[in-house]
Length: 306
Image (cartoon, rainbow, N blue to C red; front, top):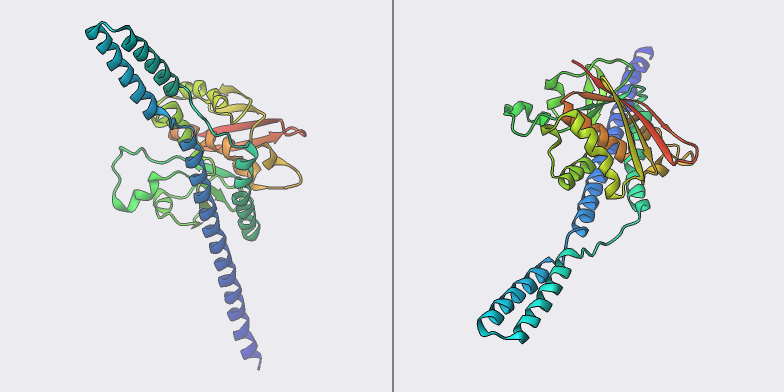
């Protein structure tokens, strides 16, 4: 009778572990799906900033130029006035950009699901480590097939406060759960936003030095993502102050999100991604503080050597 009970316990424990793993895997799939939807939304916002009247403007300018040429050939003042009018309206259509404005709170709300999912995973796994941003290998660098996964940027969150990182072979497998050291690998919530910044600035962050990046980052305010950005850099660390970020409500006490302090909001995460891509080194968010009124966020980044 006792041997039967001893056989049942391991089976029950194994079933519980399998159920837990399945639940975590489901959460990870949900996180990937939510992040994909966020990326699509960002792409739609980017498209909305383009010039739908550009073709009309070019057509009017060409017609105006032809009318001006015709007025010179025919010595016609009427054609000249028509040409000037068409050219004027063509230039007006070409340089006037009809932008569809989207409330900043919309971007804020679309990000909540990702952080809530990460919170559930970390709580279920009982992980207490820090998040380390691992840079991708440059696109023009050849990698064998089994290392292709290193072309993607990831965040490694360890189970404990250990500073040990997985081997490149483990990270290249593109697995969610890493065994040595124990931890998880997830996609940065700000990677899409960093890619958008590269497009807007027409710059590949892997081809510039750190000083140039520090000069570029304050221009984020031109995109309406924050009111002001201040940077203080020293050796292998950077202290960045962000005033009036559109993602500030993610730090609200009512939401009580834990992962947003660990890996940063999408804007803070995007800056970490940019630092990792420019330096080619791992980046850690050492501290992330927000004022009680949520207007001011201070972030300390560390560039990890070796």
